[in-house]
Image: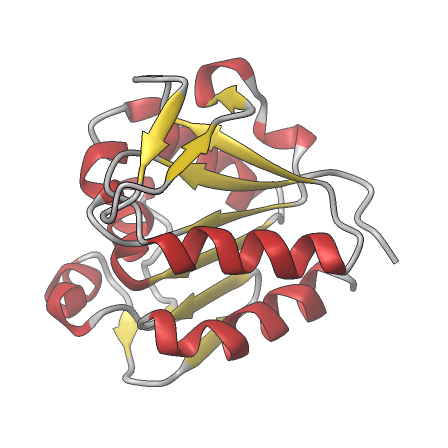
Length: 172
């Protein structure tokens, strides 16, 4: 079964390579249309190791209503993403429309910037735990946390559980 609308994977410089490419591969294996959405600062972005990803579109060229969900990877990319207000707006709009919001590792910074954590149960890389708590989340140290349309995980080692839950939610 494939999604009626594409899934966005947000990309920016210094992304965590596994947190972009593993969900992309798994979602495509399940028949989803997956698009790389960049902040607009460049047409192509390098991972922390230099592995490139070419954006299909910039976040300024797309509408949240045209997507079923978004993957927010970690690495240092969220620090660059949050400098572009439209990225947080895209996440907030997709969230408010009931889209699946899937964040892993430092991707939680974008959930903070989008203002969607108050009263939500979530996890992240432990170094940004305080940021999520300050934004109103109930932070827990678990492999994957599903709270309504929000899916969060801590680190690359959690990717299997993360993508399993994401695929389940997207197929509902």
